[in-house]
Length: 283
Ligand code: PLP
Image (cartoon, rainbow, N blue to C red; front, side, top):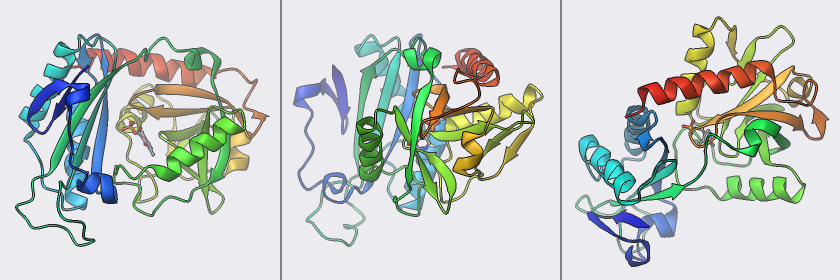
């Protein structure tokens, strides 16, 4: 694989980052994951807008302009002959002598990008659906910032796997926040799509924005409110969204079957509509 590290494209085993990089020492960094389908970038502008916001919230200096970032993404697609998969981008505050205080202004941020070839459209999860376990949401209180501080999310996913499930939904004050790396939705008995409103409690998913807009355009009732685990278990359908999974059905929650235990009709339709739209607007 060819990767990008601070201005250079190089073979992956030649990419070097300082041991003093604050991403390494403090998780002082943010990231984005953009999906690539048919060699094109899905929803790129919105990923870059969220990156800008994440950097602003942490007073991180932008390592490059948006045009340059687009060029790097495209170069990595070409150099790696990537037709389907992901591009990971990470910005950290850069390398400085270890100190809780931010380093001097002139410290250069680090910018790293790499690709991961992966089947995104034809996956078994899309046909069989996901099994979810619920776990307490023990992450920090600024989940709206896409930081590289992902340890609890990683622990939650491990615990889900240990229990034989595909993933975890996190719960705070009895209400579902989101998935370990996705936004969470249910379709209630009246056919209304329910998902948690944006706040500091969840990441403003790029796929979430697109799916909610498409749901409304197709005449589906959408309610942005938090829902309980009990509501989710009794829901007609449940699903997740993320840039790497698009829309994926959830078929069990803590062992309880959702609907008839098969991917729901509305979920499958939203996945199809989302994919169609994403491909039409990919760049
Ligand atoms: N919530 C969390 C915690 C995430 O890590 C992600 C990203 O994958 C999402 C939601 C979904 O966001 P997006 O649709 O932008 O990938």
